[in-house]
Length: 178
View 1 (cartoon, rainbow, N blue to C red):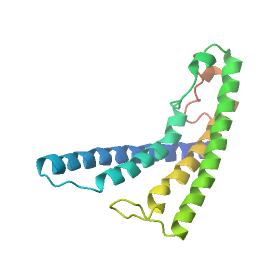
View 2 (cartoon, rainbow, N blue to C red):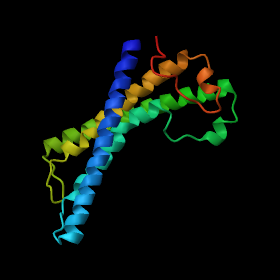
View 3 (cartoon, one colour):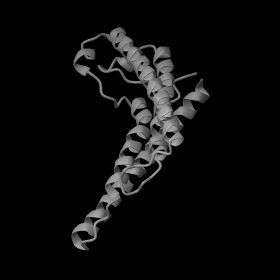
View 4 (cartoon, rainbow, N blue to C red):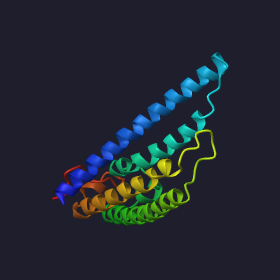
């Protein structure tokens, strides 16, 4: 299980690095588009479409790393009032919910990609890009987040409660699984 933990955390770090590169590329593309439109009076019409795809990629690729760092949305007003046992149960239940939602998103996302490829669906914008290309990050990111939720669940299950004593449920650090 320790090997799986390391592999999934490494993939999550790779995902967040790719998400960061996607955000940097978006920033550069928007800057280029602004200069072309307002300085040179030559608008670049495809930039908005591509930046939209990059935004989806950055969200989906960074989700697993955010899960490992406890950065997903949480309702702390309730969990901070719970004891260690309640926080741990809430954390475990939340990870089960994340894994289930990620599994559904991965399956439906894979179906979406397969359909787009089958009918040769192209984007409506100026790029006329095959839609399966930007769509493929949805099932990939969801699958990574699902596996990350399973790894995090095992780590939290094996944790004795030290990770939930600080007032908010946090996952054990990397390598916490044996």
